[in-house]
Length: 165
Length: 257
Image 1 (cartoon, helix red, strand yellow):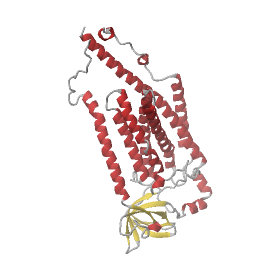
Image 2 (image 1 turned 90 degrees about the vertical axis):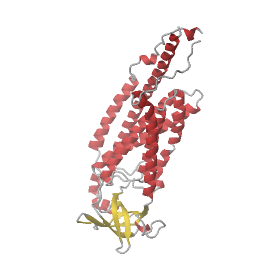
Image 3 (image 1 turned 135 degrees about the horizontal axis):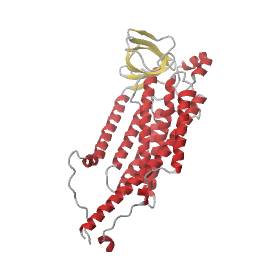
C-alpha cells in the first residue's frame, strides 16, 4: 500500500512568488477590515455635523446654533455677491431664510435658485451662517437644456422653489 | 489494490483540451455587446441633450447608473448561487464558480460606479467625495466584496472555498437594500432615484431616459458575456488544480515501484 499522506515540502523562501501568493489574501482581508473601520468612522464623524434644513436651525433638536451644522437650502435669486475670494448669499427653505458667508468660491454647478448644503457654524451676533464648505445638491429631475430654453421663465421659477420637504 | 500501485498517466480531461472559453453563443453575445456599446457611445455622447443644470456632466450618468445597477445584480447572483450551493442536494461547485465570477464582475462594476460618481460629484456638487449615507454605504459594499474575493483566495479544497465564501456571499448581499434606500433613510447629498422611484414617476427627459436604457442593455450584455467566460475559466483553473494533484499522487506511487 503506497503511503499517500501529505508530505511537508520545503517552506517557501521569503519574497518568493509562492510565499507572496500565500500571504496576499490575508493581507487583503486585513486591508478590507481596516478600510471598513475607516469608512464607518468617517461616516460617524461626519454624522456629528447635524444635517438641518434652514427652517430647522435653532428650532429642531440637534440643530442648535451653538454647534457645527450642515444646512440645506436653496440659494435665493439675486443674493449672490462675490468679493475678494469670499462669497455671500442667502439660503431659504420652507419659508425661512438667513445669510451665508462662505470663505471661498463654491464649485460645481453653484448658482442662484439651486439647492446647496453648507457646512459651518451659525454666528448669532451677525445672524449669518459662516460656511467653510459648500456642496451643490442636484435634484432627481433631469431636464434637457433645449426644453429649458423653451420655457426658461417657468424653469427658473420651478428651480427657485424653496421646498417643503 | 492495482490502481494504487500501478503508475498511470492521468488522462487529460476533455475540458482541459479546450484552449478557449468561447463558444458560438458567447461570440454572438460579444458582438451584440460591442454593437450596443457603440449605440451607448452614440446616444450618450451624441444624440442625448445636455442637462439644464449639469450640462454635459449628465452624460456620466449613462455609465454610472447602469454599472451601479449591474453591480447590485451581480451581487444578487452571487448570493443566489451561494444559496444554491449551500442548500442544494448536490452541493455543485458550478454554483460556486458562478458566485465567484459574478462577485469579481460586480466589484469591477462597483469600482466604475464609484469612479464615475466621484467625477460627476466634482462637476456637479463641487467635491469628489462626501461621507454621506449613499456614498459611505456604497464604499462599504465595495470593500465587503473585495473581502469576499480575498476569502475565496485563502486556499484549501474547492469545497472549503465554496462553503466559506457562500456564507459571506449570503451575508454581504444584505447591504444592497441599505445602499439603495440610504437616500430615503438619511438626509443625503446624493439625489433620490429618478427612475423606479417610490411614486412611479420618471423625472427624466425622453432622450436621456432612452440613453440610460441603452446603457443598461449594453452593460447587461457585457455582464452576461463576462460571467460566462469567467465562470468557465474558473472551472478550467479548478480542473488544472485537480489534475496537478492527480499528477503528484502518481509521482508518489511511482516512487514506491
